[in-house]
Amino acid sequence: MRFGGIQKTSTIDFPGVLSCVLFTRGCDLNCFYCHNRELIEGIGPEISEDEALSFLRRRQGLLDGVVVSGGEPTLQPDLSQFLNLCKGMGYKLKLDTNGQRPGLTEQLWQEELLNYIAVDVKAPEAEYAEICGVSGFEKTRETILALLKRGAHFEARTTLYPGLSIEELEELLSSFPVLPLWRMNYFKMPEQYCPTDEKRLKQPALTPVMLKEALPFLQRHQPNLAIEK
Ligand code: SF4
Image 1 (cartoon, rainbow, N blue to C red):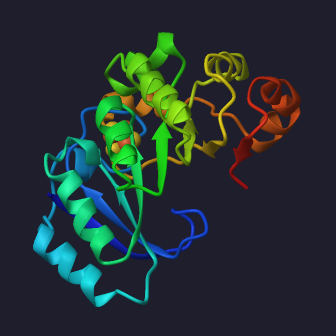
Image 2: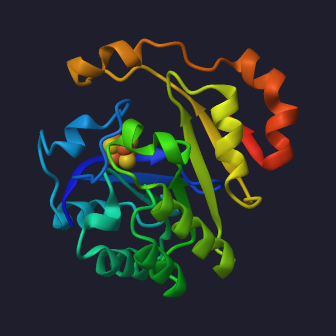
């Protein structure tokens, strides 16, 4: 496993579980609003698997869970073995994924290596490639349908990126069956970004007032929406 960062304690990343967050290096998407550009570009100090495991051993009994985030954790060839080691230490496990490897994500759930999964749904199908560099809508949809079929504990997450309209958001929500939870996060300007993206990063983004007004329409498609406070 290749890590690029550890957040030692979090009360918000794993619902109901006091956890740490391990950030893996590398990602196969390139979202224009990404806040982890140093991870996707592999810049900055690397944390070895041994260092991460030694940290987790020291925190046994103090933390209850581990969130494996990124970058994109499912790109790491030894993810399953690593989750097994964490599970052996008694930790509950959450995976944050961009949804591009449905088979692996389903398999990890089936093997009882995960307690919770967050799947990013980046944009409506027609916008996917423009927003994150890859036409990944179908893979994401496949991941979510597989998790639904398995009765997995999971949520979908969408960042309300600049330029996304209420109509496009409604279209996105309506293109999935009703999900157990779909979290909407407001856009925040990243510290690092590609200079060529500056113009679109500065486009208007949806605001809390706009979301509040549109909520009844949005909830017709997804009643279990959670909007960041
Ligand atoms: S999937 Fe996540 S880590 Fe990868 S580019 Fe998009 S926001 Fe960044």
